[in-house]
Amino acid sequence: MRLLMSRVEDGVVPGPGLSVAETVFTFVVIPVALFALIALLSWAISAPRKEKPQSSVSSIN
Image (cartoon, rainbow, N blue to C red; front, side, top):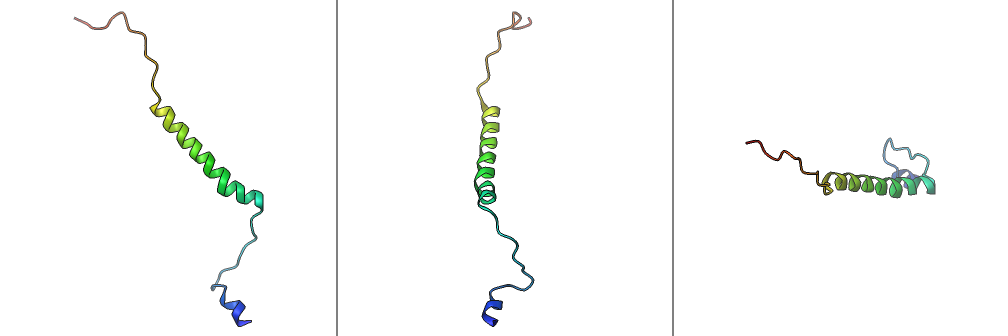
């Protein structure tokens, strides 16, 4: 009995385990979605802009 008690730290009570769906969602879906969001935002900020049509007034003399 003493051997079993030594594996648990003082004050630590293990909670319920995660299901397969919760594990996949937490460790696969969320990181991939965050990566895609960051990649999309960085692409949108640095994407080449469309050239604006030249104004008929290019300079004032």
